Length: 273
Length: 299
Image 1 (cartoon, rainbow over the protein chains, first blue to last red):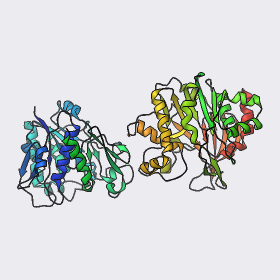
Image 2 (cartoon, helix red, strand yellow; image 1 turned 180 degrees about the horizontal axis):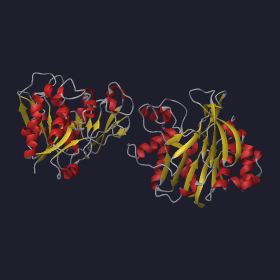
Image 3 (cartoon, chains in turn orange, red; image 1 turned 180 degrees about the vertical axis):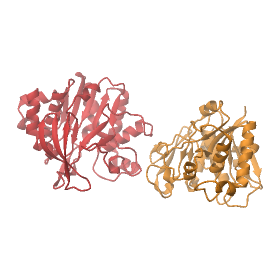
Image 4 (cartoon, chains in turn brown, cyan; image 1 turned 60 degrees about the vertical axis):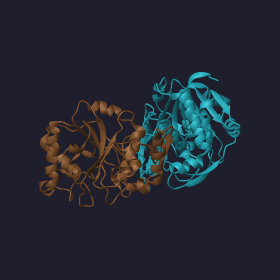
């Protein structure tokens, strides 16, 4: 079975393709068995050669008009070049090999990260960003990291998500405390609740750097408060946030975190691989 | 050189303002009174030895300590502000740099390193020996009423920093990992300014709690879990602003526990058959005669 990672990186306010480029390098440097990343980008996007070299496949889709280019986030099923896909947000980095996750996922067809960690390595408990989920008893799914196989059932699931994306206001009107914008996580959770009578609880996780999920009462930009440094031990890149080693996929959220010297570190490391 | 299999290790270095010799005798006799495995070795400087001999008979000294190691190493002495109840404070010499010597100096295969102001009042330490772990250290601490210390500075090295472990009680076995740990503590001590910058704690005098916490964090692989706590995983501590109302005997002390927010309010707390870290050293010295007498009656 063909396995790989897939992310959507449609440039707009931020250069998401650059983030996907660094994500791809982080996967190359950390994953021993499965490290291919395919990237969904805007049609006509000019992708630098060095990016093309590191991406497995570049998939072009039409560019939505809105600044926040979420409208294609239901298309993973049809666009994925893999039989088994782990979908990632492009503002993530990997430091440890997750080959064993792929092995465990053999027994499943669709799984989402349902719990997240903070930078101190504690499971996050705040529902500050998830009130819609708790109020409406929606499954606590995170689309920043999820897995699917190409099955008929999943094809229908993604079709349902397409319908929610295209009619999100009508769907969200049925919710208590609905988000005021199209939230991918909420759309995926509604479809999961309607289609599957099951519990969503598994080992998939990542470090979520939304400020209020940290144990430290951080209300502002974490990237301005916490100290970060990267180290490179014989080609293994590690990240410490306030001296805490980051073990899980790291969802940094704040785009400014990706400084030029970080990109250089990854480029120099990947070149040696 | 290994003399015994198991024992306790104390450090006492001179201070003009506080009588660490007497504190060490209280601690050692509390060990002798309450524990089966009760060998005690003390590492001290020459001035403490002189004080010890002037204050106590050789019979008491022999009962308290099995081995006395005199350190001739000169350490930097800091000044530290102490409280003696909410109503008095004073500055005293603070000479706490010798802890890293514990591994090298301990005459035991298994050692428990204790602060001299830690008073043993039960036999829980008898259950620590033969631990599967090479090193045990606590991070949980509560006040006399069982409430966790409320300030973040007593839980972490800084607001967003690593967890604070307390060097008050440390179990270690002679082993490569414990040796590495104490070498690391020494390295951190020698490069304290760098680690203060790296771990973002406020500049101040050297604290063993900080260097031990950093060493634990590094030995854990820079994550929060790894090195385990002792069986009694919480240190019960009286604040420096707490007072002692009465000593009943060597296993029972009645404290006046002050209210952190309303310092004029005190609660009587009876600590019985429970080990306690008495941070108000002057209060411990005030009751030391009665405490030592009570211990000696039982020996």
